[in-house]
Structures are given as C-alpha cells and as structure tokens.
Image 1 (cartoon, rainbow, N blue to C red):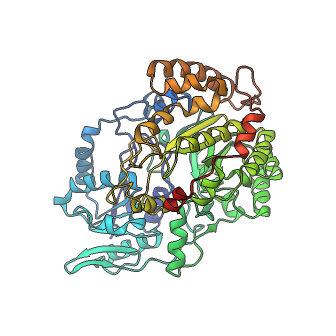
Image 2: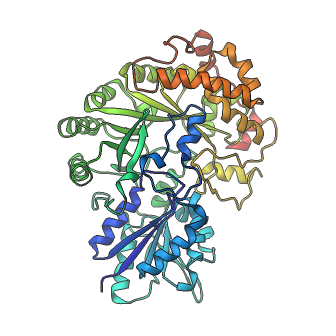
Image 3: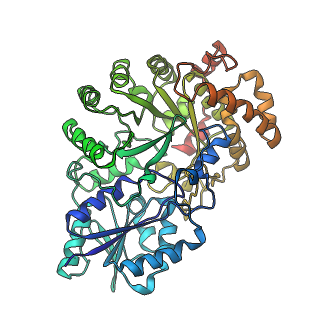
Length: 540
C-alpha cells in the first residue's frame, strides 16, 4: 500500500517563505513511500499588497505588489470550497496539518468543511504543544500532535500501511469512545536526519524582500531551540517541556559539514539567490563553530544571507568573519529600552550600556541590520515606550525598524501574567491576519497603556525614533491627526528608505537631515525610568 497524504498548511495571508516544518514532513512522507500533495492558504487574500503594503505605509520597507511578482492571489470566499474540491480529487488516506496559534481557527474551519468525509487527520505544531487541552476540545479535531512530530509521522504511516488504528501513538492525544487518550511525547529527533523537501511549492513562494531588493530565499534550520528565557516568547516552553518529560536537552545544532551538505542540496535543486537562517538566535553557539561556519560559507557559497540573533552576541571578531563570509543582513530583538523592565519582566538581563557598546561594534562592521520593537506589553507605560525610543535612537545604524504589537501567545510567561491580573480573557486565542501588526487585546488599568494609546504609538513610533526630539511635539499631534501623520511619513520615507535602507554606509545620526544622538539622549538611555514597586509585584 502506498498511502496518500495531504498536507494542510494554514498560513497567514501572503506570509511567503514556506515553513521548514512543512519541508521536513514532506521529506519524511516521501521517504516512507507516500504519495504527497499540499493545500495551503497563503494566497487567499483580499489585499494584493499584504503585509508589505502595510509596513510600507509606516516606512518599514519598500512597497511591492505580490500579484506583480506572479503570486497566485485567490478569493478568500472560495477557500473552503477549494479545499473540499482538493480533498475529493486527491482522496487522501490521511491529512497532516501543522499550525501556529494564529491559524488554528482557520485549520478547524477547513477540517469542518470536510467532516462528512471522515478522513483521519492530525493537527500539530507549537500551539497544540503549548495548549493541547484547548486544541483537542474543538469538535473538528480528532487527533493532535504534542511536541516534535517527525517520529510521530513515521508511526502514523506505519499504522496506515498495516491498517491499524491510531491509538497509543507517542506524541499524540486522540479522542476515543472513552474520552481523550493522552500519550507520552516522542523522544527527541536528530535534526540532522532529514533534509527538508520544498518541491511541493511553486518557486514564486520563495520570493522575499531584504533591504529593498527581491530575492529567491530558502529557509535553513541549523539550530533547534533557544537558550534564553524571554517571557514574551514560547521558545522557552519547548526546553522546559523536554526537561520535565526527561527527553534530554532540547537545544540541538547541526554540524558544519552537515550544514554545508544541506546548503549544497538547495543550490543544486532550487537555485536560490539568498539563504535565511531561521534559528532563534544564530550566534548563540560556541566561538569555534561560528568561525568554522564563516570559513565554510565563504569558501563554498557566494550567496548573501540573513540571520536573527541577539545584540550582545555580536562580538567584533564574529562580525568581521561574518562580513567576509558574505552576510547581507542581521535582525535583533530589542523589545524594550528600559533595562529594569527587560530584566524583571522580560528576563533579558542586559544593561543599556552593553547595548550601546555592542551597537558601536555592529555599526562599525557596516553590516545592515533591523531592530525589532514590541509595544503594548504587560505593565508598559508611555514612559517605558519612550525609553525604548531613546535606545533605538542611540543605536543609530539600523536601516529597518519593525514594530510589533504584543500578542499573548499560549505557552508564554507573559500570557499567564496577563490572565492572572485580569488583563486578558483566559479563553483568548490569537487569530492574526497580518503577522504581528494586530491591535492590542489587553485591558490594563491606568497608568498602563490603553488600547487606543498603543495603536497611536504603534502608528508613530518610527517617527519618534527617526526625527530629532525637538520635533516630538509635532509627532505627538500626529498621533491624533492622520493627515499630519501622513505628511510626516512622506518626509520619513523619502529620507529613511532613500538614504538608509539600501545597505549603504550612511548611518542614522550621521547623515544630513537625520536625527543626531546627543549627550541628552545617551544620558536618558543610561538612566531609564524606574518601575514602581507595586507594578513590579504585578508583573513577576
């Protein structure tokens, strides 16, 4: 028997680069002798510009139209019927679905549309692992995957081939006649065992902008897990889960020879023009490994590449080696500019003076980079937001600034804090449609930020970060005046996108017409607003 497996891939509209997990499961299913097809929701959007257009409005990137790039944009109203037609025509023996929290409800709607066909299925991913009780209770869901799924998928295929039921498979929860059966998790996988297979995707799906230019980008995993404890992120959940269930160390890295082998396969099969290393923190690895990677990449690959890491890991000697290897861009999460809030609430114990020191190293390297800021976090006040703005101004050298609204995902410490303080409905589930640019869902008492103020600051924070502080009264007026805000953004986009975002050597704070970081800004960065004791009690 050659099982027919349909991969269901719910995705935020026009979130382009395919998930590594889908590539892994495709490779495993083919290796196990299955016929494989896919239905994804990426192209179902009423907005041809999508997230790129939204970010362009506030100067976060250059605007481009997905439709002009050849992306197959489809009517969202046809999604359920298209899925049903796909299922009927392919006639799968099993449906494999991988989700994040934002698309869980969409996945359930899709499964409900074919419930009468009674096709066995499993939904897995970060959300079902962090909130299995929530996921399994949905009427459309019969089986969920909890924690890593590579071994679980293999066992499911074996059951299909031998025509056995799916009960008592490790790494699953299932609904049975007597209730929900909770099976223990699978042992950890060897992340070097499978090379992702992306042949189910049209090559236009790999189109991605970096620094104002378009590349054919392939995602790469070299490191699974994150060694840090950031309370707004659900990555620490995986490490804790693995430890509590005696599964071993969740943090695993591929060897440099294995990374080279994988990159070469992508070059031979897909002809990419860019690599994106999707690790949580690329430089959180031994020093020798970083230099070995740079030497390998410089010798064998000539493509530009991107990675995400932490500011304090960007040592000068690493940056020099990365620059020689061909790094094109880096991305850092700064989140908050108040070091007491970062330490006590976000579990990021790095003082501002260290950030300032490492920003100098990064700027001197002349490697283009993006800063990530989060607004509307639990217990955040307007004063704390302006601590973040001043630290971003002191950075000087970024050529991209992304502003994300805090989303209280399941599996994060901050979500628990929000629920405990009555700031969040315990039944809340994220259902984002444009990535992290959503409205705040928190109901915090004053003096903490209110929803309306979070939205106003989200819409103007780029302006505050870029323009001189003497212009801030005008920007504050623009928080309430859309016409004034649009005029300021016209000036901002021409200066910022024109002068800084193309990866040149001009730095914010050094170029004509840009803000200058003076002693007042540096002093304010090193002397951030203290948290009031009653606020700290609520947040830790």
